[in-house]
Image (cartoon, rainbow, N blue to C red):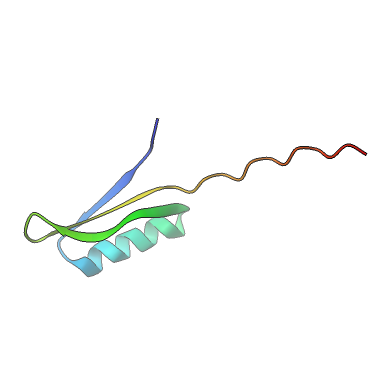
Length: 59
């Protein structure tokens, strides 16, 4: 299951600020602020991929 977070705002600045807050909380932007349907702005983010555990090295 894919997790996506969408941000909708009235201005580009508000949308960019909300996206920056998501990045601060470990999300990765997948869609930068874009104007849609007139005066609405939309951006999207997904959770950052978790690093895979390294396999133990045998001596």
